[in-house]
Length: 167
Image (tube, rainbow, N blue to C red; front, side, top):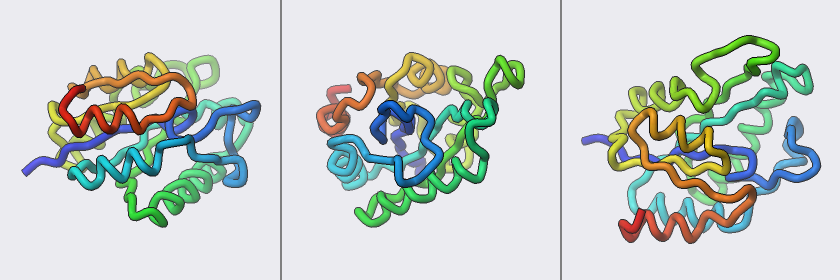
């Protein structure tokens, strides 16, 4: 049996984006309102979670891969404390102005497709929630239903609609 999943953008969807857009220190990470409640609801309905994030600050030399991994580990541990398991955090460290074009940067779907294969996900029963059109495009390219939110918007109402079959 295949898994159903919710793919999530990180910055602006899971965590608050503020004047420090590039988060390189776990102390700067603050989960958005409704994230814990929304993911708990989806978890209880059998969804698994994958985070897909563009981390162009690495290409821009604003922080390192290790810094990004530390923030991701900290975030995953916040979720684990609430019994929410993030199966994997995939991130693209590239930026076209610094590295040229790559397939892992959203709106391309390489990282989404990699997760679909690795975690045996049924794309037709899965979603991508993000605050940018590139998130939705990456998900749609891989066969997911896209849910575009506003930056830092509470995702709980959208999670309720997923559970009710309204999205």
